[in-house]
Image: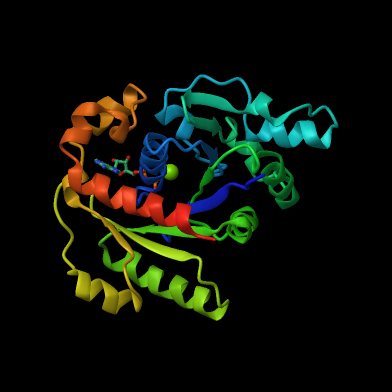
Length: 250
Ligand SMILES: Nc1ncnc2c1ncn2[C@@H]1O[C@H](COP(=O)(O)OP(=O)(O)O)[C@@H](O)[C@H]1O
Ligand SMILES: [Mg+2]
């Protein structure tokens, strides 16, 4: 049986568009007829379920607790379908419990789901927490979503050298120009210079959605919406090439 490709989505600072990126990548993979599980590992502030307007009784913490208490039956009890091809394992509803989740849990969880999906996308926060580091270990690729801001780029440069030190080639840098109405001040050449590495992908500024809140309130993923798809040809191409490259990896 084929094991799922695992990708973690992270950043060096908050608010760079990780969750938006994760969900739109899931959308493109779904449109390519792949089955995707989104695990919301942003344990203290995860908003995947809220963004999808997904009602759910259980979450990641319940799963962890049930395993510890030997009341765990099957992983499906904690997973909710958003649409055909995209399932979600929501982050803990109560952030107070979040930091209790131990790293070994993630190993167990991934062993339970990795034969059931083509792709597993793990949406995280920007911290190098023990849980995130375990997610990194299991990932085929680690997507760093950055934006065009001085401090973000400086932090990315440090992170890039950390990965070099670890001799890890899992890092993929995604410059996200779509979180703001206006374009950032640095050119792509400046950015490469600042972070001392290549920018692998760039989500164009044209993917900025004026009606962001309207879509979010209605639990709509941009790239699953016909109207957005029509006006997002460039962004779709970028997402498709990301999807193809992650399906290609060995
Ligand atoms: N395509 C987009 N169009 C408009 N605003 C966006 C877009 N992507 C992100 N944003 C803005 O950036 C904020 C952070 O995005 P989000 O995906 O939640 O980032 P993160 O998961 O890194 O915190 C959103 O609340 C929204 O205001
Ligand atoms: Mg997020």
